[in-house]
Image (cartoon, rainbow, N blue to C red; front, top):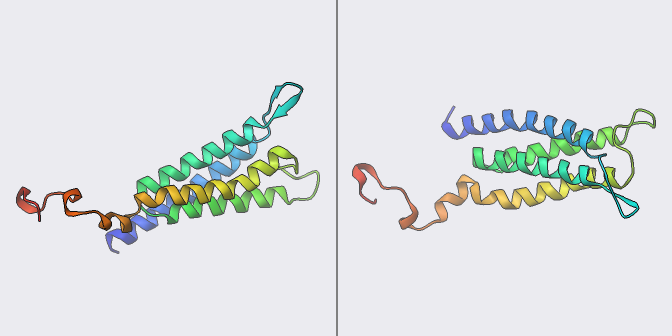
Amino acid sequence: MNRRAAGMAGGLAAAVPAALFAALAGTALHGQAFAAAGSALPVGAVAALLLLASLQLFLGAAFRTLIPTAVCGAVCYALAGWWSGMEPGKRLIAGDLAGGIWVYGIVVVTVAMLAWCRRYSRSSAGRGNAANLPPGPGGAQS
């Protein structure tokens, strides 16, 4: 297995547990609200989305490819969709404002993190000029 394939496998192996953590923690967190001026602000849903974004940013920067970031978002969205679509009484994500922000915000955050993490991908590393390349063997620029 070449180095790139090994990195991809490691990225996928890290993306699935990260997505499980984000889905579980985000689902537990999304219902928290802050009461202000007679209404409840869904700060838990926003915090859950920030958690997901930070995990996706870490995956994109650590593995220098977009695939773990996309897999993390897709698995998280699939789990949140499944938990919000369960029959009443067993549903983990209600159809209220906080639930809508959490479930649909996963898509928005994933697209935003994919756009942001493009700068970390290995394929874009070759687009720089020679001044940005590391020195070749013997310390000289190649």
